[in-house]
Amino acid sequence: MTSDKKYKIEVRLWIEETEGPFLGIGKIWLLENIRKTGSITNAAKEMKMAYRQAWQLVQEMNQRAESPLVEKLLGGKGGGGAKLTEAGERAISLFYEVEKRIKDFAQKETQNLKF
Amino acid sequence: MTSDKKYKIEVRLWIEETEGPFLGIGKIWLLENIRKTGSITNAAKEMKMAYRQAWQLVQEMNQRAESPLVEKLLGGKGGGGAKLTEAGERAISLFYEVEKRIKDFAQKETQNLKF
DNA sequence: TTTCAATATGTTTTAAAATGAATACTGTTG
DNA sequence: CAACAGTATTCATTTTAAAACATATTGAAA
Image (cartoon, rainbow over all chains, first blue to last red; front, side, top):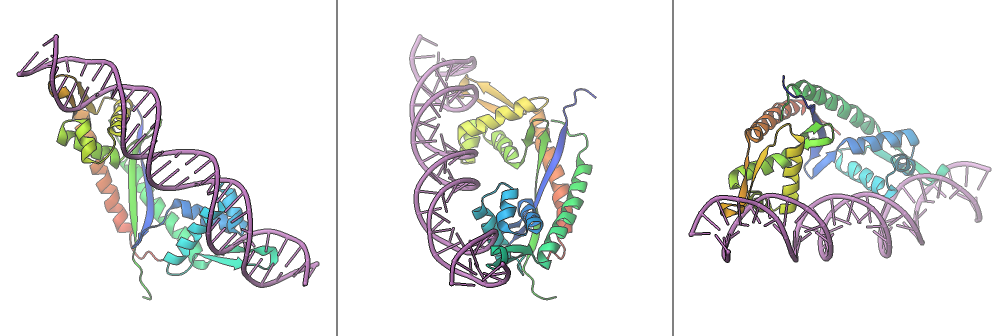
C-alpha cells in the first residue's frame, strides 16, 4: 500500500413523511431531553437551543405523528411541563434500532476507500 | 392494521476525512457537471451555483484528496477549463457504489414504521 | 501583441435561520 | 385568590451562510 489518508463513511438518517422530513437525530435528542427534564423549557436549556425552536419542533412532531409523541401539561403545579407519550418512547427506540443497523452496515462498507 | 400514514427512511452519506466532511453528493454532482461542461464556470451555471462556491469546493477536494480530483487548465484557448482526473472519475464511481449499497440496505429497513 | 474565456480572489449584499426579549395564558397549590 | 413556573406566541435582533459583484491573472491562438 502506498500513502494512506484515512477516509470513512458517515451516515445520517431520518424518517420522511408525506410533507417532508419528520424525525431525525435532532428531534430524538430533544425527546430524550424532555424525558430527562420534564419540560420543553429545560430540555431546550440543556441543549442550548431556543425554547421557541424546541417548542416548534414538538408541535411539528405531534401534528405529523399518528399520535402525539409529547404530552404537554399546561398550568398547575410548577406551571406545567411536558412528558413523553408511549408513542414518544417507542419513536426513540425504533429510531435508534434502525440507525444502529444502518450505521453498522455502513461501517462494513468502509474498506479501502481511496481518493 | 389501524391507520397508516406512510413513513420511510431517508439516508444521506458522505466521506469523512480527518479534517471533517470531505465528499458528499453535492461535490459529486459538481464533479459530474465539470466532466459534462469542461469548466468550473459552466458547471456552476448548470447547477445554478455561484462560481466562487464551486471553485472553493474544487480547491477543497483537491487539497484533501490524496491526489487531485480535478485538473484545472489556466489561460490558453478558451481561457482554460477544468477536467476530471482519473482519481476524480474513480471518486464518482466509488461514491455511487457505496451509496447504492447503503441506500438499498436502508430501504429494506423500511418496514412497519409507525409513529 | 491583442483578444478571449476561464481561473483566481477579495469585498459587498442579500437572504435565511436562529436567537432573544417581551407578554399573555394556564391551572394547581399554598 | 395570589403566586408560580412552564406553555404559547409575537416581534425585533443577531448571526450565519450564500450569493452577487468586481477585478486581477493566465496563456494559447489569431
